[in-house]
Amino acid sequence: MPAKSAPICVMRILKPHDLKLGQLGPLPRDAEGGPVFAEPWQAEAFAMVLRLHEAGAFAWSEWAEALGGELSAQRADCGPNDGGAYYERWLAALQNLLARKGLVTPEELSAMRDAWAEAYAHTPHGQPVRLGGIG
Image (cartoon, rainbow, N blue to C red; front, side, top):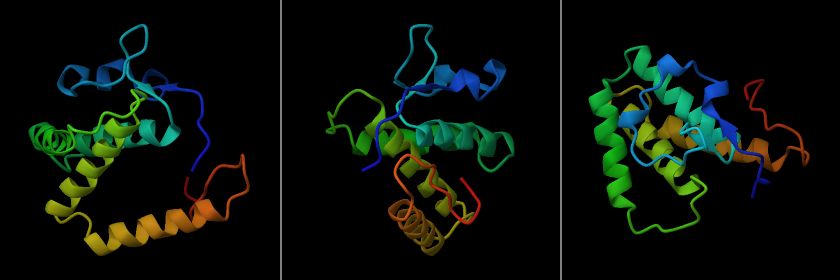
């Protein structure tokens, strides 16, 4: 299991005008009301959704429906409020939406998960996990 890192605020990654926070549901928030991330991958997943929407890969209503479905399906999960479970659902919603739209196949998703797991298993402690020069 990866070591916990310091929370990352999306405001350092994205410009405030890029955010549509009112439509995102119960994100973990910092003192100023911005989203907080317990792990770097959570910020990356967040930014990926915004960028893919901006690029026209899906409508915001499609994203909201996909995320809402994932959150509803996992409502029984009452883990720690560090955003981990929320962003796991966020990532699942993104993967499912992209697969439904034919932008990625289930086989490609599985191969990518396996490649990242392999890279993680072979990365020295404290070093960033890299996949073929990515990451």
